[in-house]
Amino acid sequence: MQHLISNLLDMNQIDQKKISIVPQKINLHDFLNRLEKNFDSQARKKNIELKIDKIEANINTDQHALSSVLENLISNALKFSPKGKSVYLKTYLEDGSVHFAVVDQGPGIAEDELPLLFKKFSRLTNKPTDNETSNGLGLAIAKELTDLLRGKILVTSRRGKGSTFTLVIPQ
Image 1 (cartoon, one colour):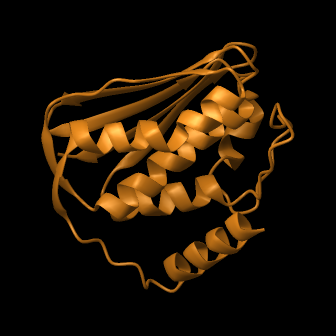
Image 2 (image 1 turned 30 degrees about the vertical axis):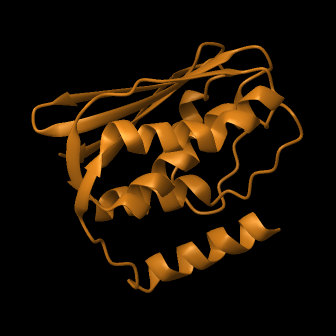
């Protein structure tokens, strides 16, 4: 319930244009270490190996917005992956941008459902694998925050083969 309320408040602030992006220097290695620690227990609970590539680089972006987007993508990857699988966060720099690719080994997303991914309250046919809950707001919030960061989210997915959500933001 608390997660739902938090998402509703975030979406309300986004809709009312009350979120401001405050860029600051972020050490990616330290940032990714904290992110990994935040998800360690959720991954262990499902016996999922969470692998996060850590690179030595500094970027200039809003840490809260970046955290919110990546937390949502990693949380979804863990929620929709079966026990005993792996979730990866691959991070790399390319063409003045930083790329964060969250790769899971879940059921994949049907091609006809891809256009629904970033719409508010969208729920797809896939269900979380361990009775986790989903309120249909997380990816909509992630998309809006990504736009505010002047970035983009790319999705590739194949039924039965998993999904990759790639966040690309200016360095």
